[in-house]
Length: 433
Image (cartoon, rainbow, N blue to C red; front, side, top):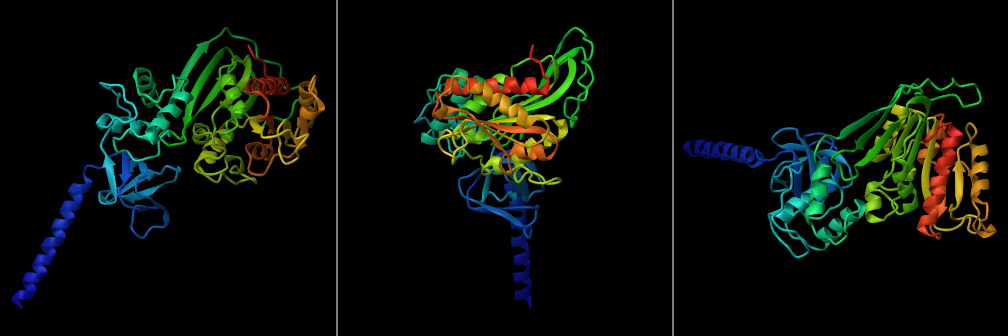
């Protein structure tokens, strides 16, 4: 009997010791980043019997969003999925650092370097969506490529070296709030004339305040690998709400390059919504798809539906918020549609709502002036299911996908894209300053 009591007491002691050690082992976990040391399941709730979302492999870096309790943390994976994962350091080890703090380097970092300063750079690149490897302090090929991609995206010298300019840009992007607003005051102007019946019925807000122009930048998916910026430009007069989107496919540069120019335009009337780099992960990697798959198939395909992944849902939420009457999505095809019906290069694909067919015919007529028959633009009907243009059309917007062809020089393609946006503004009744 005495022996049984002794064994029981020892068992209780061991359980208590294990519980205490677990508390101390997990007490250092905080919001920031974490590294998966052994494969661990991402779950829908912070409990062991919750549904498994996916097995997160060894070596993946996670963004820690919050602590659920001492045993579970809410995280976001590299592919954008959000759920709960263990805090047990045997499986998931926290990376103690505040990635939003100012990065101060005592040396320029390059391929082959090692140390804690490399860790700090890797964590920041990981949070910004440029790096998906191990945060191990080893400036190897993956880190080098991530730095080059970051520099290329932000128009820095592309040398793969983390020097003063690259450090400054990292600090700039990770500092401050998710949203910033710059407002400029303009002289008060009389409101534009009311809709005379010739324009399509409004599905969005037309009450842009008179006498004040503003530019607001909002970050979608802040803190995720796919975060991207949206720009809201308001004119001084009432007018239409127009949405321009580029980079839904990351390997179609003319669209997002044109949209990056459009975001800097000033308008006299209405509200202009621009998402230049919708698929940031694809753009950074020169790949068609996002981390979730094909973004151009992820938007709602019926009334009441939602996007099929976090990125499409974030963009769709902004569509629902602003309810633009006009939506133009900028793309590219690999061949001329007039020569190869398997490609949609050199086309406008319109949704049959409002006056979009008339606009499509007018646009192609203008662009085809001086073009040989083998390169002319064609008009197609009905954007593909799951595209933003199709979803917007189903919800009452006048919408289309505009496609250039990657066989043309990039400058030519960007000029076509800009021309399409300018004519789309005319169609919508929006005026540039």
